[in-house]
Length: 260
Length: 274
Image 1: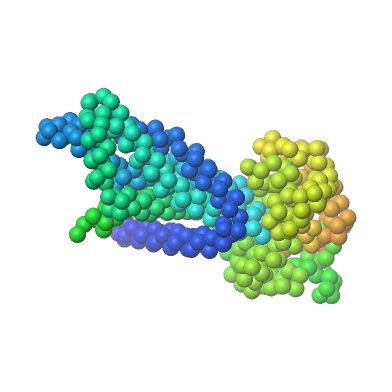
Image 2: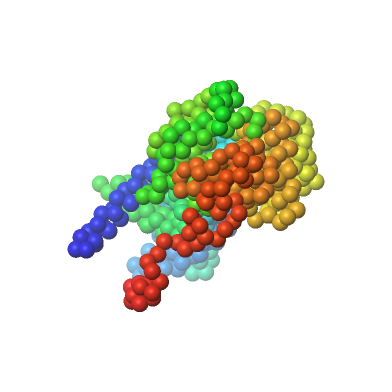
């Protein structure tokens, strides 16, 4: 009785470590399916459409609003120092470095990650995955691997679109609404946004987020308890874990990229 | 069972032990499935009938014992070997397990597309023939969600025989069917077995339907075989557990009540803490 709490803690830790181990084994198995994905690019294209193209609307609209808010907030702060001409660089740098990769990853986790988890989880619950195995088709290679690469490829593209639309949003508000000089807006952006420092780092970030979000979504689905409650819990966990991991990774990556 | 020569036995199980957590599912189980026969494995729910199918197909691994299918030791096969063996087996899942985003035609075509290089017209002919065999050629364009339970099971059956397997395993094929689809499924199982020279393993607790088409029956209870033989032999078996199962008696060696403390004691206790 006295050690019950301790035992429960131990069980929890061991369970978590086991899940972590299974997640890594699954990732290895997925990477083992790379050849299959290359042999049948059609499967990959379908998933890029599913995860990427179908996320365009939410990513685009969110990007526009985030850019517009940046334009407003940035203008109010910068004009106090008479520096409103720097609005362009401020909007672009914040989007390309941080908000683009991070917010796009959070949106993708919510839209595409949750649907991936639910899809795979339901396939497990309805024995479709076992059915594939019985047809001598490896579900990890045939179903999971194309989805993984689809997510990893779609994420940087979505982040780039988010940033681009966001810059336009900032432009509409800053230049169109608040009267910032158009030439200054664009030329400062062009002069100060560095390709390697800003854009490449942003792309690397979103690539890492793409791996994290898709991996978590697939694992949660594949590892689900095959009941309605199990699938619903996995779907929730998929989004929560992905969001936390993205934010945590963002800090680590930022420290590595921009720290001295 | 009389001693059969090795060539007649397609599935040979010896000394099988399997447990799930503390629960013993199989305790020293041994059985043979003969080539070309319809063999039924029956028993009350929870006796591990589905587990047995998963062990034979290598989806689960036993704690001890040996499982041979067509002379191959299932437990020694690596993944590639197991997948090679599974191409020669079909399995009909209780739920049908059809891929929900493909229509009926594509579901049946799926194993053919995955494992053969047939051209489109040959593939189409094969799929239509398989669908014809289960009477659903006209339903080829329907999606799985538009099928009734019995139809879904017949489509799954067409898919299971798409690669002309040597053996087909049925997991509770008759459960929850209306009398008409039930009759169709029962005769299909027998027909497919005889027409294509397959071997069938039928796991079920639908006593009458199963007994009517099986060449040989095993009755499982609590991890062991409690009776085996032809239909006549089983029907002549007077032992209490066999009679309870075959005649559907509510109480007997398998109790109506799940194990519990005496009722009056239970009613007087304060109940579970929340």
